Length: 207
Image (cartoon, rainbow, N blue to C red; front, side, top):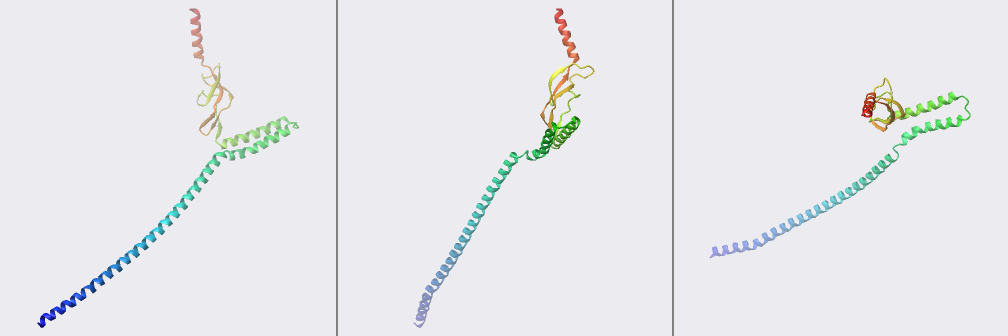
């Protein structure tokens, strides 16, 4: 009897202690969940701050790029617009020399000195052109070349190879490797072709 009573008392104690343990586990779980939620919220806030920072940086970079693009376009426009500026600046002293020569031409008594002055100005101009890569095309005495010469006339010439440039009506010029104006020239005739043409004409007349 006493044994049964003792067992019953132990069962009652065990039953009373179980809810306490369950309550403790539930509280621990709730605390753990709350800590996880707080940590997640903190991460979200941190990530949102990073996203905002990246957005601000992206907007700044986009604005900087637009400004750079605008400056580059303006620089390119000005480069094309004022490309000849340095060349023109070099030509202005030549213009000054010409104007001085013209102003003194009426009062000049020595023609030779005027000639020398003009020759000096011309040489100065040609030097400037040469520095810019502008050169004359050598024509007279050279074989006719369609890449450099434009034949205006043909002329008989003895002791000269056919299709040789005899005279130059207008000088041609190269800019670096490009022909910017062909030389207008007179070219020697092919005497053999002329003789053959005359022979053919004579034969036709005989018929």
